[in-house]
Length: 436
Image (cartoon, rainbow, N blue to C red; front, top):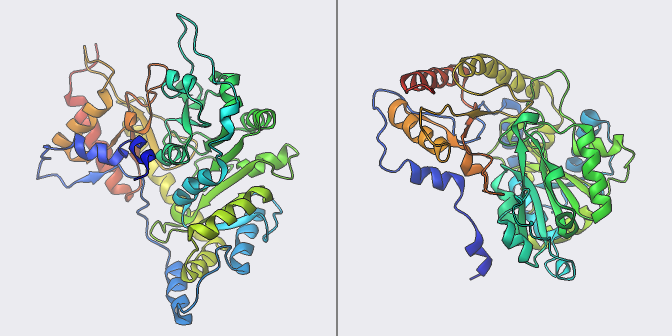
């Protein structure tokens, strides 16, 4: 067996299952789950019709890994309308079966596990210093593996992709005082020197934070200096709460004069945008040289998109009316739920995405460590509402887990159900001893 499999951590939902073992929720309350970020709004009728109609052409043919010309044109058309980008449909876009598998496969394409051995290892902190960021600072310092940098907390695929590519993840904490912006300045230069791939997520999961142009400028300068590739995860880009849509990574590159999109690719998906998580459809776009190598990997990996899904995806990318309606439903939910929870928790409306990243109120004398897991278990036991402990979405780095003391709530169900869940959470918190 591949020994790298032993490095993988339990997935957050496996940890949640273990946390809830032995819990019997009150039978008189219907279960409400805010734990999984799975869209629950209805799939638009026209997408279902496109799927059904495509079956009339039959399935007696292998689909092209690069996608049909019509599908690639739908990608570039959407990028033009959404970001004002003029990309080459033949060389700068590829279909993927959802952003999850694509983000994982990209690390297998980009990471060279032999190259980092010639680079110096990041220096250990001096006596009395606290390491700034990093996954197991001593392991990173002493190891010779290449580094894959990602935010902390983070989407777990980044970590698994890095480990199975033979790299070492390096976790960079988000800062609650700066709207959960990632503290890139905390990363030492010798860590950047060993970095081959940087995962960013904007809008963020679980924070909902959107990266501004100056943050992109900083990352592009670091990429130019050290030669690493940026993978921008943008699957939540179409769920936002302000007037202006979130800035995309390719859009930022173009605004900063990087028209060649060197060393950056962006990943987007229909799952959240169009409420089709079961369709598994998205695309990757950006640096033509990276896309060419990624296509080579995918040609052998055997991950061509079904022709039926390709046809339905064209219909979805070419329509914005259903996206606007979807966004309106999320805005309604967040407008109803956020003020309720803000009365009893540290929570605010995010920039984008469909999560609330809420601070858990501590009871008198309660230690912060483990508070999010205790909160989630007791909430299920008493009120039959599921939330995800924030510490399950992060890793301890520099002696601290930045997800500690927070829970992620996915407002994916209908508004009435989300409001009922919020009301139960308020009752639960008010029934606990209050912080002194």
